[in-house]
Amino acid sequence: MKVSIITFLISFCLLFSNSETYAQSALDKRLDTLLSYTVPVIKQDELARILANKNITLLDTRTQSEYDVSHLKGAKFIDYDAFAPEMVAGMDKNEPVVVYCSVGYRSEKIGEKLKELGFSNVQNLYGGIFEWKNHDHVVVNDNNTPTDSVHVYDADWGQYLHKGIKIH
Image (cartoon, rainbow, N blue to C red; front, side, top):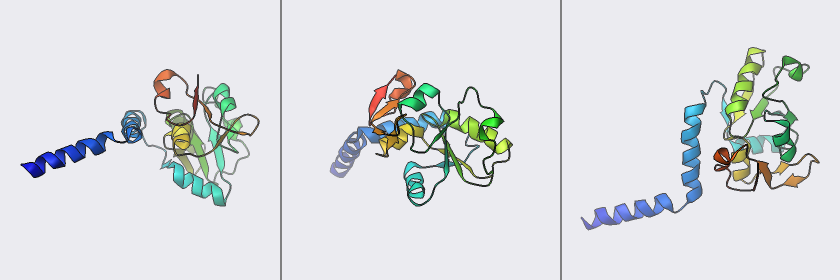
């Protein structure tokens, strides 16, 4: 009986000792309801390791105002609402492409379109720019200067950004 109470107390303390872990779990649950996983996902730290050794194409699928506040260094702006095949004309369809948005929903939709256009190596950044920043990776502004600011789309989605300055 004493062991059961101690085990329960330790488990309870561990569960609530790290609010970021709890928030990540909330994001995971939300993404599981939104994403269909039709585009393979790549985690933040894995992408950071790849980017440290080679260049790959990064496509930011948010709005222009979101992109201007901050984006991954080297990312090309591809407007989700106005996507057209001409935006990716001339890109090598066999080269790796990583798409991202705030959390991964809009980028998954663009990733699906890229696959339909014949792109063979498309991945979606899991948790988008929010999780990228939450994992302490650098974002830059429209002057290519590192920034802590991230456009959070709205207050509801902004709850998932734990590091950085939330811009609406």
